[in-house]
Amino acid sequence: MIYGISMLLFVLGLVVGIPALRRMMYMLTIRKNSGTTIGNILSTKSAMNTGGWLMGAVTASEMVNHQRPLVTYQSPQGREMSIEVVPSNFLSRRKYTVGETVEVRYDLSDPWRAYLVREWQAAARDVWLGTAMSVAAAILWIIGRVYNLPF
Figure 1 (tube, helix red, strand yellow):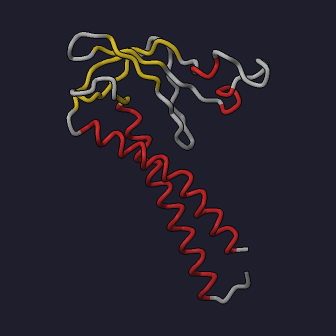
Figure 2 (tube, rainbow, N blue to C red):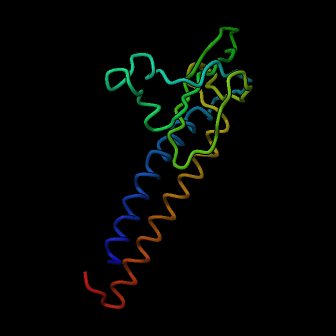
Figure 3 (spheres, helix red, strand yellow):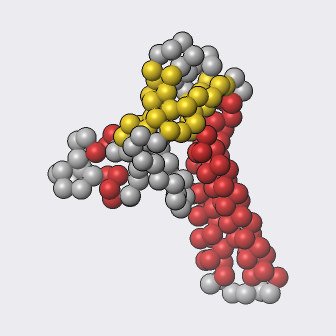
């Protein structure tokens, strides 16, 4: 029983931690040569909503209760740029509203590569959460081995 819980925690830690780590690595590449600006949220509807899903009855983003805000911001050259934010982090509590102003960090050499500053903290939290789950899994496995608990 303890080994099953340990494996479940380990897999859950990987499922939470690896995507967050990938997001953080992407954000770190942008941070090397970045600037910040203010953006506006135009829409919170997902691009997946346009065609419908399951014969138009239910959209995919409604099934998983995700918002995918479309954010517009000004590039250093004065052009209007837009990004769609995918808040696919674990236990997301952030809600975006249409018309809200948000801080956007973008790559100065490639201004279309950008992310919302608030998403950095969420990714860091998910990396720590995934690491904590994996460590807890290892501790439970070691406890099972030390006390010779049956598989």
